[in-house]
Image (tube, rainbow, N blue to C red; front, side, top):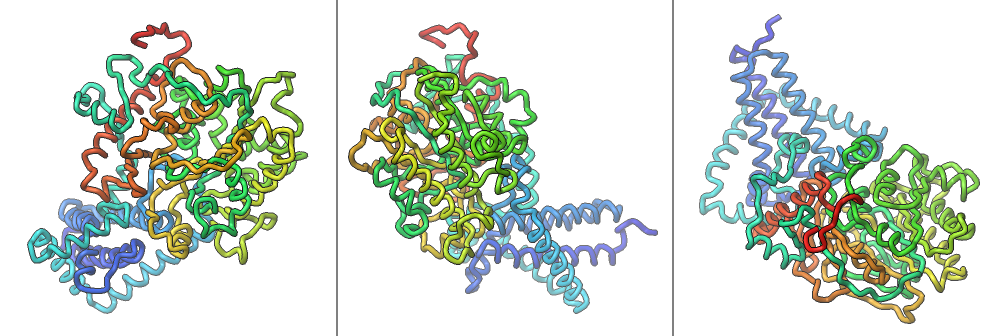
Length: 620
């Protein structure tokens, strides 16, 4: 058997086959990205926006002249097309190419790689093969070749004056879609490339340090621990009150009634809670997903890594010293607990929380045994929101926090999981109206569970001595059903990004009237120092990147967010990225450099000094 592609006929057939795939790929991407094709200008602009796709297909065609072995070449094409399918599948479910978050959270692949979606994938494959076969039988391959050549000529004249309107329209797509260039293959392999800071070659100039300070980001490069600083904040003196901190999975502020009346009948109980509380507006998540969200908020850093793989298997990260909100509570004689919805050995969140200082972390398994009469987790791998709130109520009723006879105040945090992207409630949950929209179902279900706890709390002995903080680990992920909901609700300012305004609602029995405060686009990087300041908790030194939102002079021009290799600036309710903003590109580059440096410090254990470190008061 001849395994070479030397003859012209073989090359011609292979090239035309690839061109047909390219044409089908273009149509698919135009559909997935909702690119307009209503006139000649928009059609051409869409093709220009997809020029990265053209480049990758062109390189595959060129490779036919260098790879002679047919088996190797066909294997290359199969790999190429497989990655294309993965990326298109990712765009369909998340409006973007496969993110590093997916690699870090492989234990959540069942959210998209379930039976239904695999069948859809197979149907798509069959459709592609069927379409190619029909096109080949119709002998119109040459027209695709002509199309490919014409497109090449169009790209050559892309910068010409007569195409100015086309290029202008193409650039407008970048504001709507967080994809700068459509390079599916490059974007896939980029996931596995290192993006770290090199202390020997990358230096901060005095000008850069000054600009960072204006952004609220400080560094003292003379110190071995450049983020270390003295605490000079006088608190507001709510010390000795108990604190219950609720992290609700992936809840954006725009989906809660206190922030958006379009959801008034979905989250009535949370709305009732907010009427007796301090409501913080224009407050954004600074990172994602859950691991970074919890870690970053409690320790006020931009964590390098997230996901169960790191916290299960990487011993290096478990040797890093952090200074977190848990440490501040501990210094002020609080007992700390965390209630995690996950069952044992499913998530590395428990390992993370123990490492950053919680006295005791109670997984779903322990919560079930101690507070739910050994009920099985209704969601199989995690407790439903109703179960977790019932466990919280039982925890308080049994005074588990004082099991050793201690009368210290407690800091109790919990994480509810059922509002996760793609999730839905099950038969024993609460459906919203006809139950057709999973996002509304899970929000409604969360609200009912919270409402039952809130009713208990208002009539309990804790009402007068306990502060409740309701927030989220991060914004809701841009899953396709969520994007559709945003369209139906006419949320015109919604951007298909993992960064958005999140809730921050604080109930304090000392506050006699509800209050609304404007965070002015600050982010959850400021959560830990703000809570410590609000509580009046004393601490001598810290390594917090963020600053207390309660100090007016700390308000800066931008909010800053990061996860993986994505960097964001938040200003006036708009989230800017290096893909959608040329105006802020220099600031984004500096932010990227700063965050990469803090993550370099983290991985080299230079965030906070170890207990044995000898402190020089003037130069720690």
